[in-house]
Figure 1 (cartoon, helix red, strand yellow):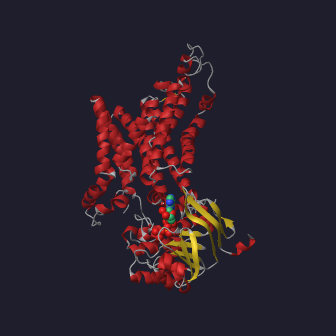
Figure 2 (cartoon, chains in turn cyan, green):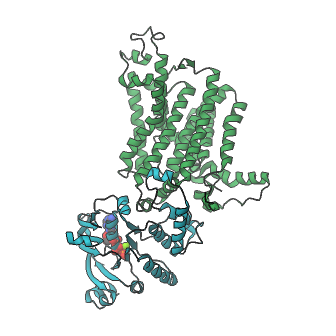
Figure 3 (tube, each protein chain N blue to C red):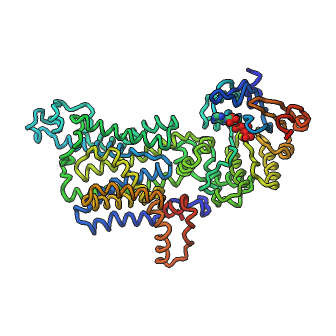
Length: 248
Length: 384
Ligand SMILES: Nc1ncnc2c1ncn2[C@@H]1O[C@H](COP(=O)(O)OP(=O)(O)OP(=O)(O)O)[C@@H](O)[C@H]1O
Ligand SMILES: [Mg+2]
């Protein structure tokens, strides 16, 4: 086990079974610090389930998930966040009734306990940090706007911003460009590259052009198992990958 | 001090709503009502504590409790136990088999004051109990439920069941609780007659001031980060959880706060009405409390107060004349409110009252927000 502590994230022999159906089976997956990893695979391959397992939304039936050497499989969800794991859901998940500013503030990593939140003061530091993140996700001119009125792409960015403000060491992004226009995709690719500096990022994606534009190592998931791993260029020549996924 | 942009300041209500409420409760009602009616209004206002608590935990936190009568009852009974013990001094109970204990105990052949009654001989203990016990009960219930992620309809049903259990317990343990009749014949508080005029006036004002205090406390809680997390978790619990919050803790707190307010209401009820009984603990009162909040507007703390006043007043008017019809009427009103006016009277005020007010002032205020933004904006009192 000692060798695994060098990895930021080390998943070993992970299995999760939903009433006998194994959505993830005997999976091992390692990530380095500051690595950008893309996970692809057909529908139902278990990509979302893998992220659910890392962030604690779903509990593993067997196996271990070590983050910075700490076991996550039995840690409560909010503590996993405190450890430095941020999760973006497949559907944009923001607080539609609150303003963009409030959305970002609601994720600000101070005042996370009940009494901390009651005593929370919106000081200059908070406002400055929110502005800074808002600039990064290009919503700095929309801080006062109700989040529900944003475009679909902007909602996706806002959710990414809500994670960024926590400065996580590992960011899990489930299909961040789904439903985006082409220009939004390009901007998001740019954003993700900036974000990936200084932290590890897992991106689940279906859009091959987008995957290529990101660069980085790609993991192909199929029926709960890893089918192949490597550079996108190499995978595109891989017979098995073409058969189950890229072929159609 | 840094100067914050406009959108960072004022949220839930400016001072106007509070000033109007204070004027109504502290000036208009005492001036217009005779003592009998004022006492009746004071009684309705004790329900308003529960309604304000429900606005917080149901309206903003999405936690529907159908058992708020439990906390109203705990506060009310704590106060009643103290007053009963004072009314049961050996001198006034000398004809009993065992003088010095409450009459209903004597009737039930109890010869010694039960241990859990003993501390209620102290006024200080009683006051602490009124403030702490309801929240402590709520903490136990909330901890057991929310940590296990029981929510929604299941939580509502369980709280309702608990209200039933408590009622059955009170009714069944007649010798310890006074049974179905409750604890009656309360006369003095530290030798001061709670039924005389000056006491009635004093309790009315104390009640009103405490209620306004609860509304202000509620506003303070909602205005901060806690309040935003609370509404956020009502709508997107997972996002909140995966932003690093222990969702259960946030729910437990607001449930306890609502219970705390309800307990104060219960104690003020006992003081003003002079008795406490299980009919203020069970399902029917608990559902009525929810109706008060719904009619007033479940996103409006002030609405909760007016809802409690109006519905209770209507109940007094109609229930006496047509007792059977009342149940049907209140049920119909509830369904209508849910269907037609989900944010209660407060939303009507937001839509029309504000416009009228600003006309009167002749100011060129922004027009009221469109109905589409109702849930978050215009139903929360005077956010802009
Ligand atoms: N809670 C659950 N209970 C039962 N089955 C589940 C559960 N969650 C996921 N599954 C099943 O596990 C499999 C993997 O689902 P998952 O959502 O991880 O796929 P995915 O790779 O993210 O697919 P997509 O590309 O469509 O998002 C699917 O067959 C799904 O039906
Ligand atoms: Mg998925």
